[in-house]
Image 1: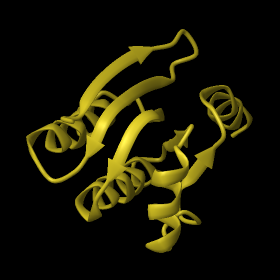
Image 2 (image 1 turned 120 degrees about the horizontal axis):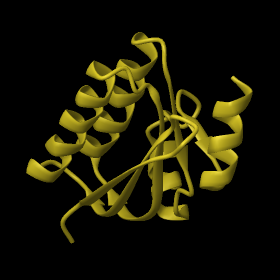
Image 3 (image 1 turned 180 degrees about the vertical axis):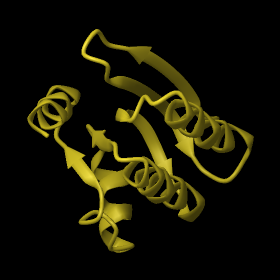
Image 4 (image 1 turned 30 degrees about the vertical axis):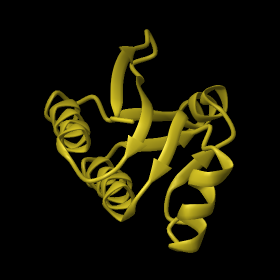
Length: 117
């Protein structure tokens, strides 16, 4: 299933990017990277990735998540990742990157973490 990317801007200034499908090598994943770069360029660096509907992540997808986290952090912002499915969380644990990323149980928890920082 191709990756679907939706973006919503909250009044708090947080950008919520909702992903659905497979986060794998390809044009759709590249579009996610470009979106993150555009947000940083526009000084929108408080971001939540809602991964509720992400069914699969491959090594390229992991690279995009880690790369996005690094880019946002380098720009002085915060990126949180919310609502990972057990399958996606397991892939991140196997690749030992889950401790590098800001992972939350749900979007509300991510928003609370951003508000507290």
